Amino acid sequence: MVDLSVIIVSWNVRDLLDKCLESLQLAQRRNAQSCQSMYSIEVIVVDSGSADGSVELLREKHPDVALLAQSENVGFTRGNNIGLKRAQGAFLLLLNPDTEVSPSALGLMIDFMSEHPRVGILGPHTLNSDGSHQSTRRRFPTLSTGIFESTWLAAWAPAVIERQYRMLDTNDDDILEADWVQGSALMLRRAVYDAIGGLDEGFTMYSEELDYCRRAKAAGWQVFYHGGALITHHGGKSSEQAAAFKQIHFQTSKLRYFRKHHGMAQYLILRAILLLQFGWQLCLESLKGALGHKRDLRAQRVRVYWQVLRTGLRVRQ
Image 1 (cartoon, helix red, strand yellow):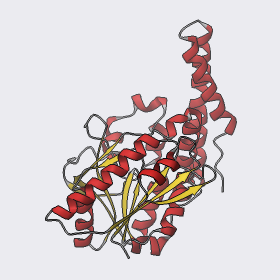
Image 2 (cartoon, one colour; image 1 turned 180 degrees about the vertical axis):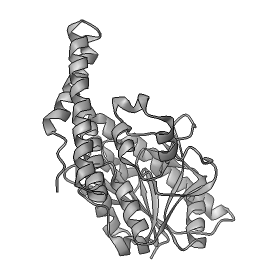
Image 3 (cartoon, helix red, strand yellow; image 1 turned 180 degrees about the horizontal axis):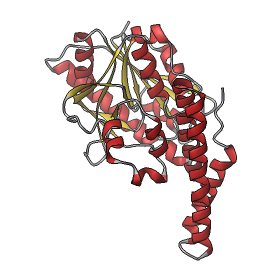
Image 4 (cartoon, helix red, strand yellow; image 1 turned 90 degrees about the vertical axis):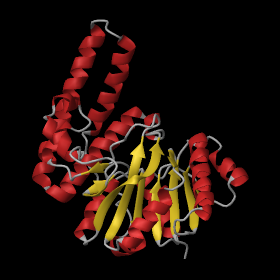
């Protein structure tokens, strides 16, 4: 068994994937030269039907990577589960392909989890491409959070909602217990995977890590954020290739989480409010377009909102 299995699900982000793998190689070399505990690592890439030369890149430049090439886009959650079944590590890191790890990050995370056996899931201190802090630690969402998060009402949300949800009352550089951490870089103990299984594939993408952390905590494990382990996340490069699908998946995943963990009443209330919001946005953008204000932009937004509304934000079983 190796110490760490890094699982990367990739779709049409060849150049970013290359940089991610190079950062992992650098981290391994630095670990061999450092005072940190030595760790062995395997890297598994689940390619989700990419058409940009990603598979060829892996075979030619990164032959040591275990490549699990899929014939179609299997989605983020299912792709991670494919990688988890193949992984041999005592620790398992779900890592986005649009990330770069700092040389010391993985060693710090492994050391911390080795020293704290009840910590089942650990998230790093994540940075944006420009080096600014990226918010990745969270408390569990409430119905109010669901109404305001990633909707046009977010600008009018009471400050206390965001402050509580995003843990803005804590220090970015500290090591903190959280309710859940973002899935762009999420390390878990094999014992957690053995106890609760893989990610819930009902979440195609978004909210799957929220659900997973909730399940882990319900099973008695702690979730922590490590402010000293730095990882850069360039952010959403796969999902931004399809704007309408991003909105649909984000909102339906949010609704699925509320139905699963908060019951049918909160699910129905939240779904109705979200549909009303998208309907209002559709009407507003249509009116602005009819008046000649940035018609191309308005037409693009109308198409997105219409596609969202056509789904009815129905959540699959």
